[in-house]
Image 1 (cartoon, rainbow, N blue to C red):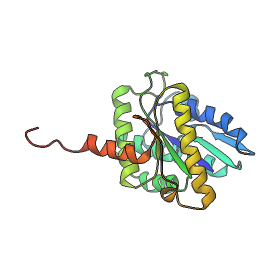
Image 2: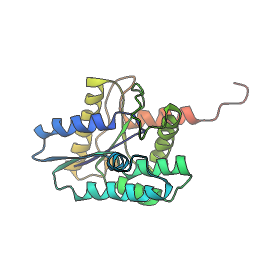
Image 3: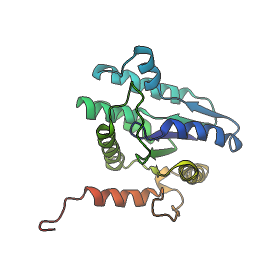
Length: 214
């Protein structure tokens, strides 16, 4: 079971992935947490990577996830996030091909939503405006390439429960030997649920051009 958590900066990816790596030890014989290589790189260099350094960050993150030997792997971000940042910040779309292929190889994609309080960390974070642009572009890429995903909203226990529900769904799909898109029907009842189909419909409405005269 390989779980990739994606999302814009300050969307709770690291907190959620750390919590899941501990919680899932009761379900799987071995669990590996793959931290965000970008953070390690930025701490080492004292700055975010530049345009020509994005490919290295993406490929290293992918390699760390692939090399994990555990039965369950929880990845705090994937190459897809790097590809989106490279596109939005540097107008470089060259990383999408390999990033989308890699994302499709995962058993579950969790999209951490930007409903948490903003917290600056002094090195990587570019501000709320960039955060919103990244979130919108990431959703667009997931939908355009038909990459199955579950959204994770809320604070604390609500956010954790949404993630666990998505994992239950993915685990059932994985055990049945089905592609992620053909798994059991999502059945969560909540006005801000993590049902991927609900998310897709909501995002489609939000991005639909307004009718003339309305």
